Amino acid sequence: MGSRSVVITGASRGIGLALTRVFADHGHRVFALVRKPDAQPIREVIRSYPEQIIAIKVDVRDAESVAIAAQQVAPHAPDGIDIVVNNAGILLSREVMEPRKFAIEELHRTIDTNTVGPLRVVQAFLDLLEKRVASIAAHENAWRPRVVNVSSVMGSVASVSERRNYSYSVSKAALNMLTRIIAFDLKELGIDAFLVHPGWVRTEMGGPAAHFSEEESANGLYRQILGWTSGDAEFIDFRGSALTW
Image (cartoon, rainbow, N blue to C red; front, top):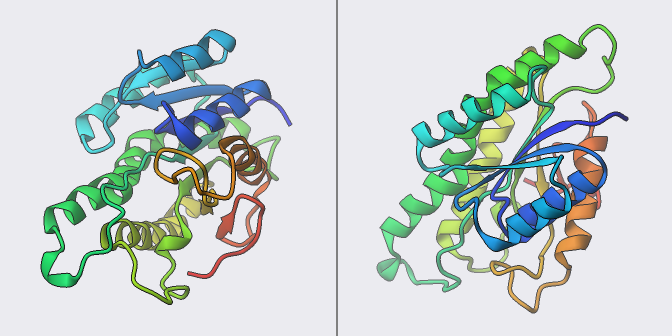
C-alpha cells in the first residue's frame, strides 16, 4: 500500500496526536488539524517527521475556520486526500447529573463539537476527497477514500445498562446516526464512511484508570482505518470487533 494523505482533527494531544505519529511513522502525509499549532506536543512530533506532518489551525465549531483549513491543505494535496479522521471531541464533565440539574448549555457545546464539528469537516474537505476518487479510479478500485469518525461505546443505545453522562453519550449517539446516514451519500461519490471506537484510553479525557495506552489504541486504529473495506461492520473498535449501535 502506498503513501496516503490523511487529515486528522484534534491532533494536538491524546489519541489524535498518537495517531498522527503512527501515520507519519508509516510514511504517510498527515495534515494535523489543531487549535494550537504551536503547542509543544505537536511541535515535538513534527520535529521527528518534518517532511510528513503539517499542522494547521482549526476550530471545528467554526465553519469558516474549517473552510480555511481545507483551503490551506489543498495546495499540498494536488491529487486530493485519502482519509479524513474526525477525532476532535470534548467531555466537559464526568458527573452524571440528575435531570433537574443537567446543564443544557453543556449539551449544546458538546454536540456542536462532537457531532456538528465532524459534519463541518466533511463538508469542507469533500471536494478534496472527490478529487482523490477521480485520481485513483482507473487503477485502485479495491481501496476507496474514506471518512472515519471517532465515536465511542458511550454512544451505543443498545448497550445502555446504567446512568451515563448526558452530553457525551448523546453527542456520540448523534454522531453514529450522522455517519450512518451520510455513508449512503458518500458511497455514491466513491467514498466510504464508518465509525471507530478507540477503546478506553489513558488520555486526559479517559483518565489514568483506563485500560489502554495511547499507542495501543492508535496502532489498532491505524490498522482498522487502512484495512476497512465496503461490507465490513460500520461501527468497530480499534481491534476490529463489530459494535452494537
